[in-house]
Length: 305
Image (cartoon, rainbow, N blue to C red; front, side):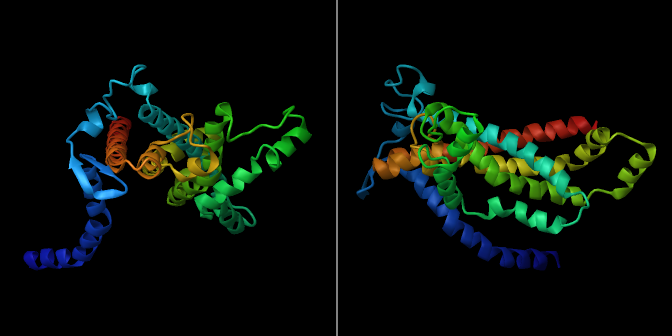
């Protein structure tokens, strides 16, 4: 009986495994292979195996004698720094804003279903569309944002929000927070819907302050799904490309790791070097996820004790 169940399980899993091999494992494996070669976009069939040269060679990603100012001043080091800056700040703001929105939507009020639907609109809009929309709104000459700020007296002259180095990255973060906060709010709201009502009724009868109820009851009960939501969002933020690519000039102030990969592989045609960057991006995201989940498990274990 056990062998039959195991065989049946493998039969049902086989189509999914084959699909994953076709759409994920094979492209990933091919990209990893290209990272050990010198390959040009126009001559993919004329690859030359060079080992770890793309990683640690004369023009490598991580060890390069041309990095006279240090690794973190190189294009790849800057793209790593930009990506983590974007991911950490945006995920933190989206988590806090999503928690606040979820707490509001969890309350009973007239028209709650309509408000819940409306809140999801920014998340439902494709990223390219929302980026172009915000690009026009933030335009330094014709954008409505500058017009409103000038009318309100908050600025004295029009600002190129997506072009000036001092504002570009934070503008991208703000647009990403606007778009992705509904996603975090939806996940947190789903967790809030499962909480037992008797705890809140007892706290209300005892006259416990709402803030104390939040810190002592709500937050401890939703911390597991909250961690899951943060992990999912962090993995997505570390892969950011389209928002930065559409909104900014992809200069050294804003270019992400994915933007660096695209520039090397498409614009410069260096498939081997770009594949090394994409493989490194995959490993960096994987390592970040493992470290975060381990830290989260240790924190949850300490809280449980």
